[in-house]
Amino acid sequence: MTGLYWALRASPAEIAELDAPRIRRVRYGDATIAVHSEEEVSLVMMLTERHRAVRKAEGHSMVGEPRVGTVTVVPPGCPTTFQVEGTASVLVLDLPLSDLQNWAAEDLGLDPARVEIEPRLVYFDPVIARLFCLAAAGVEREEMSLRAIGHRLLEKHGGRTKSGHARSAGGLSPSRIRRVCEKIELELEQPLGIADLAAEAAMSAFHFAREFRRATGFAPHQYVVQRRLARAVELLADLDRSITEIAADVGFSHPSHLARRLRRFTGLAPSLLRSRVLGA
Image 1: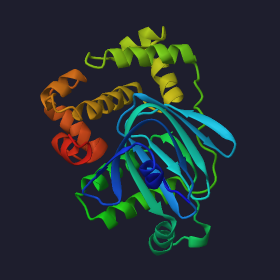
Image 2 (image 1 turned 90 degrees about the vertical axis):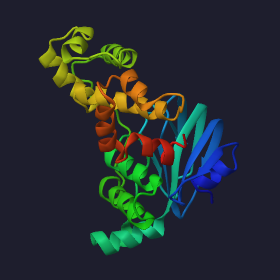
Image 3 (image 1 turned 30 degrees about the vertical axis):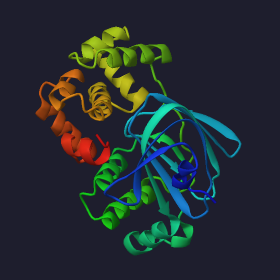
Image 4 (image 1 turned 90 degrees about the horizontal axis):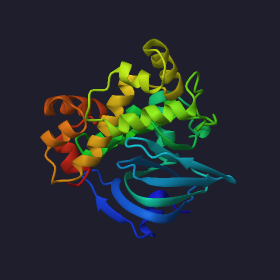
């Protein structure tokens, strides 16, 4: 029975040890990774997004859109294969089911025999993303950090609710959403007001803001900030770029603005994220 970490060790992956011994940073690409464990919940958090991943489980295939900060969860007893095209950098954690059961009983008053975690594919949970970064950086005791991740899994990802369904696009057609998102990606360093984005979708600002939230789960400004932070995380792995340059490249008016937003997202200052998590 193979958890994610051991499956990656059997592949041509580059594995880096971090200050948190149970979390590793892994770089891999163009690989097939088979995960099957009866005893562990495998979690992976994306640090890059220039690749494509297909998840095959229970006779079904699902294509995920990698985004920095998104998390994939493979529960025990759910044999899963990932086909990865391109190169990915991720954080990996295999969390024993026995730990989750103990925390469920001790901290949440739940029946440990009924603990179940649902599978997720590149799912954005900002709380888990922040906890993952803090744990990987070793700024808190590992037991405390992992317990916090376990609590979030139990509270938000327990049960057998089906996941991965797309949100209703409302009045925004897929082609309009694609045009708006492409504009954001191409012009991250520019001021992007709601009027500019609404014009791209050929809608009024009020109507666009409402329908964009329905389609993506984010208000337009929130989405733009998330994309800027995601790009910043990728760029921070490149030591040739200064934090001042990165802030300008992704549209933040000042390095302190980037630092403030990045602390909210990851819990870490840019320099600490760069040195302890991204390995730059």
